[in-house]
Image (tube, rainbow, N blue to C red; front, side, top):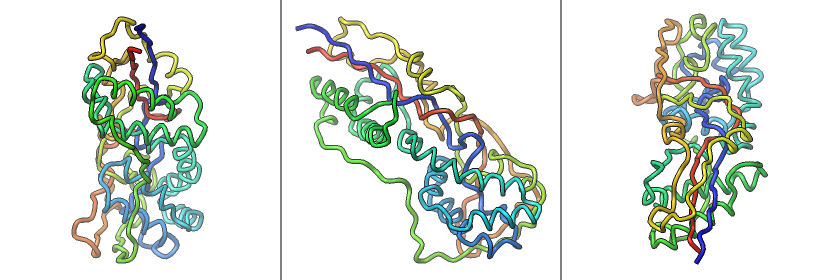
Length: 302
């Protein structure tokens, strides 16, 4: 038998829940004067923040349950000393479309350590890879992991008798919300402060931190720079290896960054829910020029 090396590159650049200064706007910053003009935005923001916790999930939920009043809401925000929040909301009109087309949400998940073959051949990890690859294939994202790449990885894992690979995988939808029992929260913000001058680190919904590693890296550049060769003599028990540091491929909502909400005008009460989310704490805002990077190489002995 001869050794065959297959390279597995899932995507382009590590990205984050705050993408290019974008995030789901935190409902707590919406001025009470904009309650009517921002009714749909408030509903999506509130339900996404109280249903999900990480900034990535909240942003994905907001994009998947996109409000119908973005224009009127943004106009009201701009007129009520909340122009920064208005700009953030307006940016989601193109930001959400781009994030979905580039499979940002599907390809944002924890990667296994570069030497942990069992992890990379585990059912949960393979399910994430399949979901990411399926999205890339459906959206014709060049230079990213496709379904054929996933199949190569799955076959390699099967050849090494990892039972997690011996199953049928299906795709997962973006985060959803239930609107039937929705009651609008009470808004008490009046504009000013962060709502007027803040950025996505302060105004975005979701409580998890995000990583800024490799921010701004393009898909083509990442694909060409992070992959290293795998020894042709690699044994079956070392079938999955990476030429890139695992620290550069962590979940979009799992690294560092801190931004405290101190704007006095951002106070709000949620009469509809005692468990309302506290909003976007500790969120970094790196640039986004690609999709979450999952880097690995499969050495399959055939």
